[in-house]
Length: 379
Picture 1 (cartoon, rainbow, N blue to C red):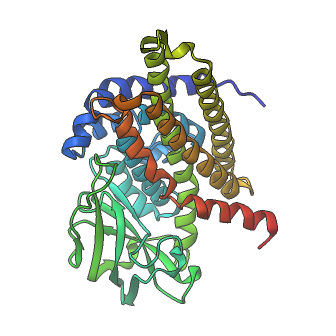
Picture 2: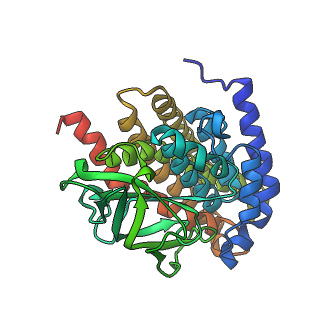
């Protein structure tokens, strides 16, 4: 067990850190307040290989490991948590095409996804199927060499803006075995979008309902075999959970670093906040809990990369711990800033709004506990 990062891993980490501080951090407040989807910044990130982090290199990907990705997303989230989270979702969708798509689909779509000339969205959740994803009702009816899709997807990051939508639709029986994964291009007749959602956070990425009405898509656009869609969606989420956990840790580390600096300067009752033992203990606990979450996240990343049997459980454990810890640390840092932490002049309130949803998406933290307990109890 070697806990030291390799020279190559430190290089990826440093590249992401520099990019986050120079190309994201100075603009994050503007992106949040004006609800800007920062396309130029995203494409600059792609120039560094962040558009297809673990996509194979024959189609323009970086072919890195899940641990590399976790290191990258922790750094990017310190620049802008919301934007880093969108890059994570885009990478998840691109990987699903890479891992399960035909040679034709890989060659047709992945080069422009890896450069972020085109953007991708992951479409699983529906208005009536959230945590119970296997009950989804969007249907894809076979009509010769096409599927005809009818239904709607909810809370889709990139909805209305992305160029490629990976859609989980029912092609067969009820339950998970009747679900297939189908790639739908923006501009396909019958594909439309709801209004842009007004959200608490994640304002630098668009979110909308994706609607299918008699939407005809070639059978050749199916990713994987018929009936394999739910397994593909869950495989994507194993990595997505690690990435979103890394985004939570990155956002929290950003807030903790700022809070330590603030406590060294801010005085009350004639002393620096850093000199009050009760507050020292809180900082010590924040640092300890973040380090514990980071270590579990890196362990899970290695398990997913290596295809270990315990990968899904470890990814669920890591996501639950990292996102719960991330939110608690950010909330605690806001408290230590007092009234200033509540002001938009300081970035902590923005990070708080952004990391809160991490406890909900990629599977709620209640579902993470369900995954873990089922494996433990054999249910």
